[in-house]
Length: 144
Image (cartoon, rainbow, N blue to C red; front, side, top):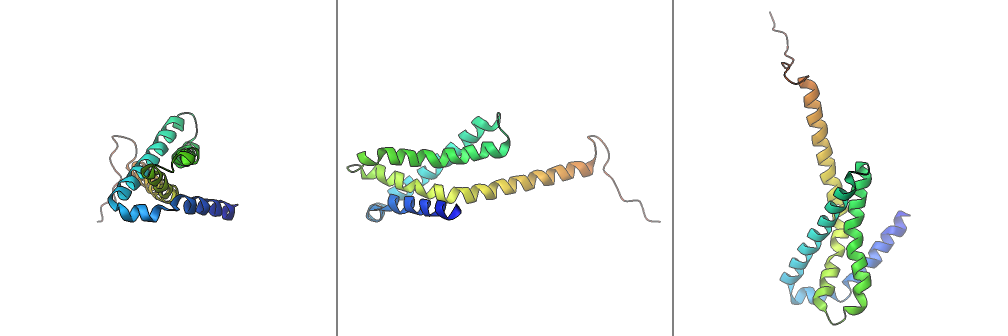
């Protein structure tokens, strides 16, 4: 199944970038700006999706909903709007740039979440070592 999913993602990427090279070379600053907008929109949809479902689902499921919210919205918009984009190269470039976060943000999100979870474990470990609130920390006995 993973191989089939990767093949599908590659087909989306190749299809999205068809004809984009000329536009990117013609206006690299616009392409960079649209790429930044695509990353911000995807990350924003992920955060909103995770927050909306965070109170009613366990954390991992809410984060999955967030990931899907960010990735699927731009793909659906691109699919629905494709027939109307032939005379609007700027919009088509934005939607093509929207493919990059779909491929890149899951790995970044995984690293960020792993770092946050490690930080949480470290904080919890320090709290256990300190003992109850207000208690003096454990000290080594004095050597004679």
